[in-house]
Image 1 (cartoon, rainbow, N blue to C red):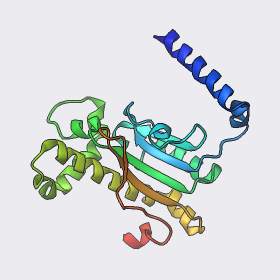
Image 2: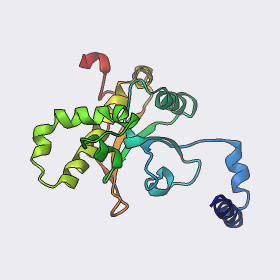
Image 3: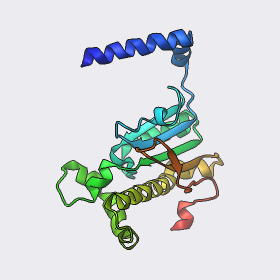
Length: 205
């Protein structure tokens, strides 16, 4: 299986060089992505593929169910690097329908360490229990919870000292919430974009 992966890589690399000579030489000299993507680790939702972007155009952080934890140093380090070093001004929190992490968060079954990681989704499910109960279909109910998780993720990214500091310094950064459909391959805007002037953590307290 590893040999097959290496063969596929060689084929892709050769084809890319034929289509665009010098592509890798140029890509190796600098990294100038336009987007920072916080998404799910699901293998069916690779950021640059679903967004139609080439390598070098999107800086990516992924975790189970695209959960934003305020204590996740991995995510925070990537966010800080994206904002301060790469000067990225468009941040995307992207979930997807049919998310296994969201499903696990709604099951009364043990999932090991994942149960701790997914706790914010269970909290959301409790907070929106009345609204979610109006949806009869279980899959549709979980998909709605996946949307709520993205909206909450946008809010929590906006609350980070990294974004608050950037906005205080008049850096024009926007945080968007998208959801991806596994069944149709389409990204949908959840209309929860936050930017300068839209959110201030101190004012919200």
